[in-house]
Image (tube, rainbow, N blue to C red; front, side, top):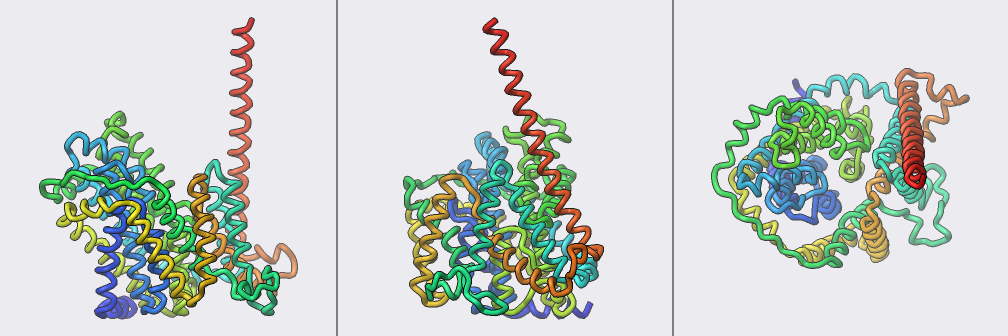
Length: 507
């Protein structure tokens, strides 16, 4: 109780309250602009947050992370263009409702479902805190190494159909982390006698290049567009009452969001797919899905908004980010010497409770803002895309240069911006590179620490948690191999079937 009171006291300062307001409203506005998204905004803001108090910096970033999905539903429903990538599924049922003249109802339902999912995840996080505080101290170097390894494997395998590419990009991220001075004996690695590589490749420079600059290049290279959504008339409060009619779908979708958010590398898309499929299979009107079903809209929005809160569980308990945005937040922790993991729950529980309370308040601020300002936000959707690209480009270079006042960093960021643009054009994932850099660093540090106590390979898994994690790694890889074999057999069977049909037609 004392820690909880201390946590609330941390929130009471004016700078934290200002961060709550800026993060919540700023996130909604950013989410409502197609082509920006939380990743771009957080990448641009990261250098600025390093000079702030850790709670202030994290509150702004968490606000943008969580509330951008609320805002992303607005263009998805009104103009069939998702504001953020995770709002893509919202277009399936949101836009058909708009075409039927039910835009206000669709937005109201989306806001209500998002609020329900966000609060549900944070309450789960708070209830799990005592359990996390008990389990986290049992994670030593070996366990955290295995958990990080499991995270990388899950990140790679989550990209169905692109597993080889995702694995190579994660390996590239691990390689990027190794460039520069090695952390124990301070010998140079992969610097090729170039002094500008001695300091290594900065994570924030790579993040700004891959996410912000690549998006700026994409917006500047594509045709300029200016959408013109119709204004929404009427009260937005109806969705709150209607959500109660679909409480089963909202609860199940939020549950999927929490479960998927806790697993590194899985995230919003899997949570949405599972919740949408569940909602369709259990619905009295499954034929409405994709044609303006309120249940489909609720399933999508509740699931994706439950993920941010749940994604904080592996980050806070083990210091392991589940996806790119929590990896960016991890850098804010490290800059302020606040190390997520077992020690955080033992020594700084008041800070953890302050974060939880901040996330709850953020959701309340966002829903209040949205209920009264939807028509103002429709003006934001109309910003020309090339003008937006120019703003992102300028802010990105300002952010990169402000890190170390280095022109070299700007050149490296530009190179990664071009790489990001190429990967986006090829429809290849960017996230494995960032998680490779972050998790690769964690794996190297923990492996080197644990090897001092390991004499034989069995010593690595001689503790219960380490053995469970090792078993999980083997099961995950085994299941993936089984899936590949099944898909290969299905392809052969299909080819044989086609061949038989072709032969019979010739005969």
